[in-house]
Length: 453
Image (cartoon, rainbow, N blue to C red; front, side, top):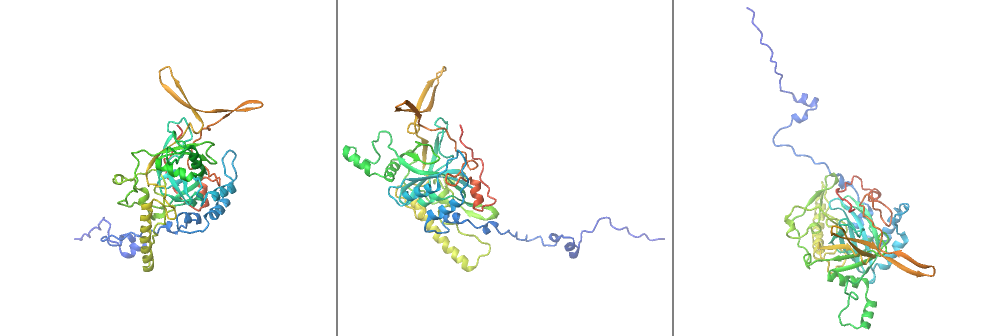
């Protein structure tokens, strides 16, 4: 009788030798299951990115003795060809204007920066010289209003830190702060509010002679300080991009008034920078109020969360020696002390808050249509609705040939944002500034839309 041999099993063997695993590239099957292996994090490429010289100076990481010479040389080398119809300030005029205002008690320099921040998004920073070396700052989400008949003629203007005056010269870009261009710059004039003969009268019963002498002695800085403390400011802007006669009105309501600086925030947020590097956002710049700290983080205006002009963030490295760790610890303590001083004074290092600026107070900003040269026309429709329209005034000039009418006011304009607006000093777009500063892979925040209605 023939003995039957057992049939081979049809199920393939699941056992593989280590050599087979290695030869077939299946090393992951050879490692143990528990505990799981540690995930090796890729070194952050962003740590290898070097800031440009202008960005380092703006961030406080590099010191220069003469900011005007430094930024003037940089911007002069970055000039773009003149485009017909696009306002441009002559470079030498820009230098001379800053020079006559800087360090002067009579200075009245202003700048409007377009700041495209990676977190806060595109916004516009209005800075007004308030003393020889410093300027108060307001963050405006959609820029200045340019249509007297717009349904959205008002803006929120949020107080930020008091800046050094040399910040008016900045045009730069980096991964952490985005791009910044000079949208407009010039000199401002403080106008009296309705019912006031002149801002700054010490007593109502001052004689006309005393009033005239007081008027002659007052500087724009003194007028600005008085108007700021009265919480009603009227400014005539003498710039390049803003039209002739353009007048702004800012007011701070009782609901938004407070005299104390915000308290230190209870937490600090971290965000992911390109390449995986974590960047600390200064809580003092993003916090709104004690009540709002309990809300989810808001993404909104301003240079509220920018990392420019304050001291540099602590550096992060994957391989830090004991000596480096000690140096970083000492730098962190100094940075915390400096942050606390900035928070308490609401002024960056080198600036002086002698005007009483309070961080994060929200002002209402609008164009003063009457002072800008418009007259109000009202018409009543058949249905009974009253419609209001603001039209440009017509001013007549008697000449030998007759009467010639010239229009005051200005033509409607729209602030178009980072893809349209150009620097009034260099003629560059935001994207061109990023390229010039060597910033590659920057991802701007979206959803910004110009006000056109």
